[in-house]
Image (cartoon, rainbow over all chains, first blue to last red; front, side, top):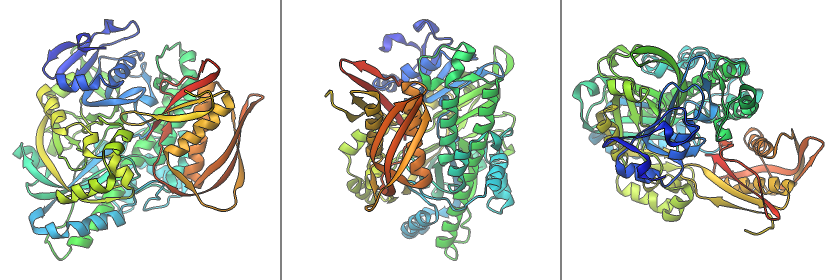
Length: 482
Length: 136
């Protein structure tokens, strides 16, 4: 595959026509600059998007974001919408870390006033938020409590005094997907989930303290409570072993479905079943349970972050409260209404490494975001900026109400470790004023900034394409890694 | 590539990819298990080992490989156990793995899942080969 394969739509948008391969059912729409597209050709991300375009029941183009990179089956940065209820649902197109996502909390604490306490804050966050491989969470659930978490999501945390009403109000779907059914979740998944709620995990998951560095939309920033020079906190994690097990179980269970439903697939990881089949319904109910677990997980970590802020700043600053800006998933399957050829149609939007980015006036958004559009949270890599964007009318028309989810990897973990030493990286970051707490130095090296694309270029692309608008740029001052 | 059993990490942008080769299916499964443990950098506590048996229904080579490695991941996360000796047999529609296990003393990395992505066990000359992608 080379650039001749693509039809250039604009400087930020390209298309692979359906005629490119006999088994494609829809075109592939790619948001990228020429440079990002050329880089993407170095791995299998575009080929994986073409494979995704063969899924039965697709309602329109498969969309790929500029932070794309190869995943397994479906590319990271991919969005696919299938007709509801007669299209298919594919667990592998949502991913193992169901409802992996980002939560952003804002404060009125001015960085310049508390710079000397940031080191202690990083230590407190590291102590209060369990991180790393195999760590247990801040609560241990009984089976019945876990079932409640599956059904209620963040509302469970609210009932337990571990959330505020405004947290739920500013969470995608209020922190609870309807239709979750814990009875569709295996005993194994429950065993794994019981001890992990309120934990960050490892890999690319993190808690980061940032400073609002620059504001691009005063009105949107005001609606979100973002103030230049003030501290914010980002929490990036998902459904932990609970979600991993649910996806593992259903990818395995679905292996016989293609034969049963006469579906041809180019990759077994794309295995799928009709949404109105029993398998499809069962997976949807289990996936929603994992999504609700993940919302609650980030809620409990937010509670721990608030404790850390209180521990460090109580008595030193007048207002140390962390207000929720938004909590949004980037690995999820959602039933949504979109307009296709002037008709409102229900579809199941599979987002894997892509963020929902609903434009102004979209039903279901909190009142304060009705005019601005939904906050889109785009973390960078350690040492680089993160961005707060909003969805637009064009994102509803062009990208199934979706935008990018991060910088996107460009180096493999092995390549990153060969080029970067964890200890040196930590030192470099500290010299730049970024305090680092990491459970493992080799794992830190794998997540080095040079392992990722330039997040600013990714953001310029989605903004150039019109599927998001800039609100604020965040600068990291402390990073806690698993 | 040697015809003896072996494994080698293959670069993958986001996740982990492992090439595995062996002269027969049981050895391929054993080698894949060793390679996965190596990727996670598993260290076991010194001391006595206990015996553990994993048994799953045989589906096909690829499906059974994913199922078998997923069992090992579950053993790791649910009981904190790793292995240092493994023997796989395939008999009467079952895959049986006899393991010598011990508690994990240290683990540097976490694997979320074993995927089916482009997974195919091929016969190449006198040996079998496959490439497994892990979600990390």
